[in-house]
Length: 174
Image (cartoon, rainbow, N blue to C red):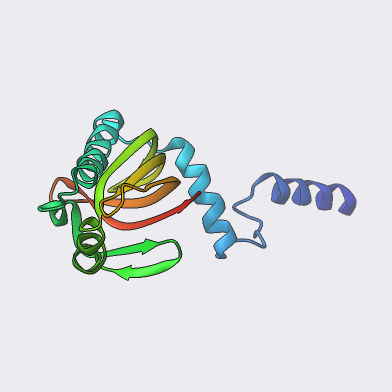
């Protein structure tokens, strides 16, 4: 009789996870597993509207880069944004624009993107993006063409109804 009772209690404990304690409960591993489990069931509505809005922000920024005119692009970024380029922290976008982009653009005749692709994932008030592209820079001094492949990963945050870039990292190679 004790064996039968033991077997029943054991079967109940095993079949009801809330009764038994997981080794992962309360750990980062459990939180990560829960995040991915929830990600499959999270519904963000209207998702396509948000994705299109995020793509529009990225397009606006890339168009400004191609025009070599970045005036007003600071409005596409949060005030405390973080910019990384090829493994280097460039500070906020305002700093990056003043100390990096503007001086570089003085040396460029043109900048053109091609083969542009973007993936967007929305999670709540955040968007995670990956852009891949090729680009060609023509140097003003001697018309030298610099051809590169690039990738940019960014995190955008919805602030007062508008998507703003809060973290961006880009890198390139020949």
